[in-house]
Image 1 (cartoon, helix red, strand yellow):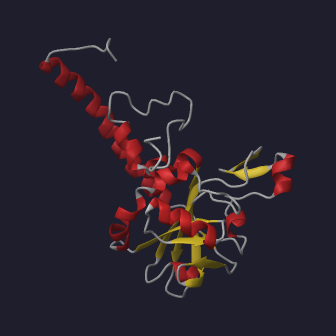
Image 2 (image 1 turned 90 degrees about the vertical axis):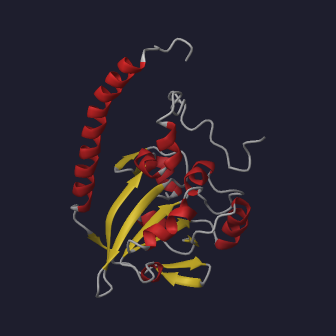
Amino acid sequence: MSKHKIVAEKEWIAARKELLVKEKKLTHLREQLAEERRKLPWSKVEKDYLFDGPRGRESLQQLFGKKSQLVVYHFMFAPGWREGCAHCSFWADHYDAMGPHLEARNVSFVVMSRAPLPEIKPFKRRMGWRFKWVSSARNDFNYDYHVSFHPQDIKNGKVFYNYVTGPMPMTDREGISVFFKDKKGHMFKTYSTFARGIDMVNPTYQFLDLVPQGRDEHGRGQFWVRYHDKYRD
């Protein structure tokens, strides 16, 4: 940092304008990619699922509420874990504020984990979160949507995650799934993303990408991430 190039304001503006050209190109490419994402074919949801939520048992259709679009964040929290994943918690710290904005655009949002609701509730209370969080402990949803893995598949090193089959050292992973419900009540999976694909919805990372030190991870992953009530430790 101390050896960084220092220039006069005029030269700085010239360099900034040069970078701006690339930034605008990336913006347009991102818009084009978003349009291609929306044009993906859909996959009809054929199974019935019941989840345990704050209002009792709810079907997937009920999770939509009065909206026709549903976003599910797959939060890593398996049965028996003392806490939910610290890295998923980093993402979840941003979710409460965006709720009203998504609802205004015909989108319902829920967080989902395989841990039973009695294990989720105290952790959610500790974190101070208000978003809707449901449990898929009593159905196969997590397995069907490739964010939880059977012990035999893990043992054989043949786990399907992020659209490839290979080894997986853990039972649960993170991801986002998006669904649409038509006027007849038919539901469709329209999009899903996993691993680094969820970076785009983390505002803290977007701000870190603007500052001189950046994410400062250098191939070490999210080594610095803590639960928000543990940074002082």
